[in-house]
Amino acid sequence: DEPVTVPEYRDASGRTEADWRGRAAAVREKVDSTEAALAEARAEARRLENDFYAWSDGNYREKVIRPAWDGARERVTALEQELDQAKAAVADLEEEARKSGTPPGWLR
Image (cartoon, rainbow, N blue to C red; front, side):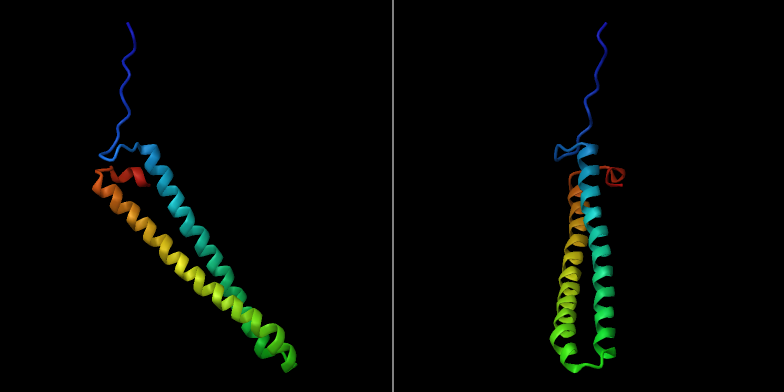
């Protein structure tokens, strides 16, 4: 007797549990890494702000610290936008999974 092979269950979009788990892990990893980078950028911006106001040499403050501080604030803004996009990607993936009849446990 030959062993009976049971085909792997696929949702309406043809994806398997492994496919969904991999995609979910990737989008969640993006959120996590962006949150970590944003925390670092905010800390750097705060440090530079403190340096700016603590430094007594106005020339050094304007020529060195202010450009770095401006750059850090721009990085914070860019990372906030990136985080919003990453969170939207998670929501989009969950909606796509819902529409294709994917069991909710597959995204965990």
